[in-house]
Image (cartoon, rainbow, N blue to C red; front, side, top):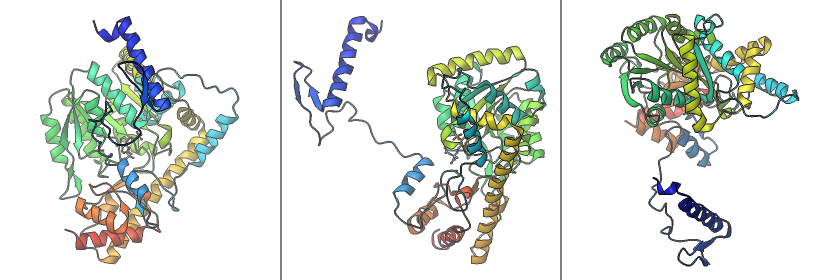
Length: 451
Ligand code: PLA
């Protein structure tokens, strides 16, 4: 038996906790020999700490860019690291429709702050499934979809991955090369084994379609494949509809399990339905899949941490058993999800006027990003910057994968105070008409002066 669980030692471990708390509160050290209290050294060596062996971890490759940016006092500094939308004035944007929905929620005195069910807000879940799979989706009508509210896209991926690690016969997940930097960590920590498939061809700055097909073709039957639903991060390169159809056929014929990550619905084309098309093609064939949805970008609800995991199953009975197991994954992880973001999303999705207003604001965000692509492309052309920069206008979604190397990125940060991830990805959503010339100057200097 674990000695920690015996009553006498649990007593001593609670004593220990009390003594740690006492030390923390009064800044004194309990002498373990005679329980007398002695002065606690307030500075100097950390050799008293049981954590003194802990080494400093690295900053996150994406969120760490913001940490570095915040420390820079330069007035011309520019953060193009994290994918967060900014206005033409360079400010974060709270959508008008979100403000309206929040006002409705505040005015509704019948609303309470009780716990949500483990699976989250029921309305939110139904409406999220409908948003991606479509109003007339047979899978929804046949109750073959289970949807659970999760902590934004990341939390949805993690819950889905933990479910797969526990209940699916194949533990290997293939992720695109390259992909969002957090994917390998999320999946590995959930208990899956991560492999990559070819996706991006640096020579063409486009899709390595043959490489993708070959890698899916040689993956073991049943393996999980992570697919970016649209606006691939970081490359901005998506398959065409025709290519998606070929991918679908191969995935189904090999019995691979698709896991869609949809963090940018509406940001690729400006249309929620058009961006949902690849996922809908996979649902239409009657096969099974997982989907992680995020409202961080398309509703600007970054900090509300609101998203959903859907699992499309073959039958209603399987879906309901799957849901019962998702609850067992979620309950010990965070018990149940937060209520505010889900209530905002549900209010918008269920009201025709609010929904329409949202689609207009979303399209405006997508259009502003596209106009930044054109402005940056033109600015480089005007400067005669060496190289073919047409990928800036061809790539899709929030990011441009510039092709700048880590040395050039470091140069731009040092000399121009422009912050971006070291793989050369820039968030087009962080640019404005005013900052385009500064970025173009920096890129021009980097490619002409740094090899
Ligand atoms: N999936 C992909 C492909 C993403 O790009 C992101 C966010 C997420 C999931 C997770 O988003 P969420 O948990 O906030 O819903 N990627 C950002 C932010 C925008 C980040 O790294 O956390 C990025 O800059 O890449």
